[in-house]
Amino acid sequence: MAWSLEQLDGYVRYNFGAIALLEELRTAGFRYKTVHRFHFSPAEGGACWRALDDQRGDITIYRGCEPGAVAHELGHGFHESIRGSRDEFGEDYAEAIRWFTEQRIGPSSWCERFKSQSRDRAILDACDFDWHTFVSRLQSGIIFPTQ
Image (cartoon, helix red, strand yellow):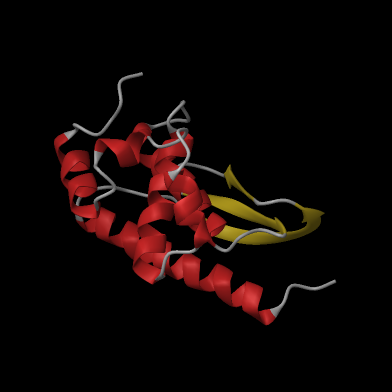
């Protein structure tokens, strides 16, 4: 069974939405990793980021993956770029990038589900779910949770 055009369109929209967001962060002085290649797997699941080097990574998209997961995976590349390595805040940064992307292109039902959970929210809680606060705290160093 192939992916539908609607599914593929969703992945593309979230990819471009997240890239636009990350480009704003680049303008603010932060790097992010780009996607070298998208892989599509027939197995059920979400999406997965795999760093290739200090500038890029691959994203595997599994059958049943929500389009917003692409923004989440790009968030992992951003986190690795600004933190220098993987650490316990990777999911929090990835969810923040997805949250802000969703707010820009039109929130999905994921946003309500996410707001009601208590995990992977450290970054968004630190900036009160506000993009401008997120950027200014990144620039000041306030938003980085201590390890």
